[in-house]
Length: 502
Image 1 (cartoon, rainbow, N blue to C red):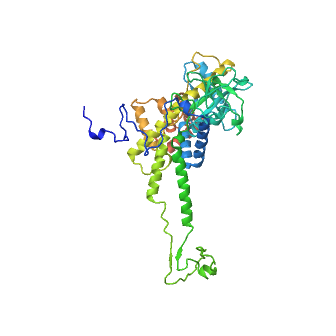
Image 2 (image 1 turned 180 degrees about the vertical axis):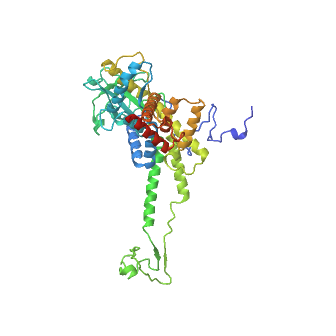
Image 3 (image 1 turned 90 degrees about the vertical axis):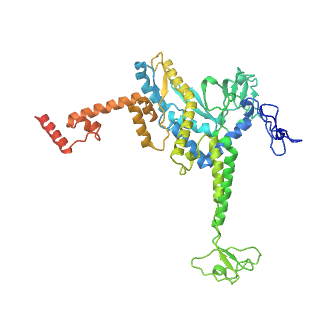
């Protein structure tokens, strides 16, 4: 082992990180700021008043920054897109035939709001909420007719009735909290000693919700929580934009200040230097000289000729801001802020500087972010789907099956910047057996059974048309690979029509 040198000894009255333990000890000094103590559960840090401020900050940044909102919406489009169609993957064909039309109809009508709000829209907005608000809640509801429905609640609708300045609160004993009194709550999530959610407190939609003193607890069995945790002890979601909240605010304020400066400089056409610092008596169209000592500004008319003294000077304002250094620094901060969102800068903004290798790296990073979001949403989405199927079975709308729970979703297409090349790679992988038809069809948001049935239907249609017209099947199914002489095809069609009349 190497001997310690003189430089290993801390200087008198201070420390540069020396420690008798395993890790360096950055002791407090005038050169370092305050260091918090964070050796607690995450629920201890997520105080309700801070959680409410976090939601507000996330929504403000999302609404005020085109880069942030564009990146979040693009991510949601790639995560959901035209995919997430429920697919029964069990072995019971009778059950499949009975459930397929019913579940397809449920996917269009499952949202209590109706209209454009359907299954895919709900999941797309859920992905938006996970980045902007941190989490979102799906409430299970059943109509008087016995149909399962979903009520989506945004993050601000779940919380404790009182604002609370501690991370963990205790549910009081009231008539509304019977069965939950004495349990812990963190920002409206009521938990047992194992930090397992037992209930969720629903706040009224009014802006004055924190003045309410009444509890309205929903059992955990009626609530599906969509969020992407970063801590084992976490009870609420954290908006992805919050990881760089100070950077986003600084970027916005800096851009606004620079835009004001650009507007001010752009409004000044010329600067005249003279002995008095005032406008002459008949300057620029005869405007009289001001009696005050303030510098004067005037509007220049079209085609005006201005005469000045030999000692005077007229110059144009050199408007060369923002400079390259400012732009590079802003890009540096923006890249770091997007890294906190687990997204590359080029995904949201400017990809012109990328080459072939860096483009593939960027595509891979985006695809991993998409896959991670799909993984975070798959389980809660499956809970909703299986609950809807169970409700229909219990109501007698569809028959029972031993593997009634065996469902999956169609997956969205892979993120790509070169669709032609990726399509060629998929064809080659399929031809040599590296990938299956299910993999390839799933990347386009479909399922292999529907794909095969559609192909079979196309083949039968082409066969019927070929028989009726006399055009070879190959010309209809694969015209590029088997070209047909049009004159020959027309002659054959006429002959078939003549023989039919005979």
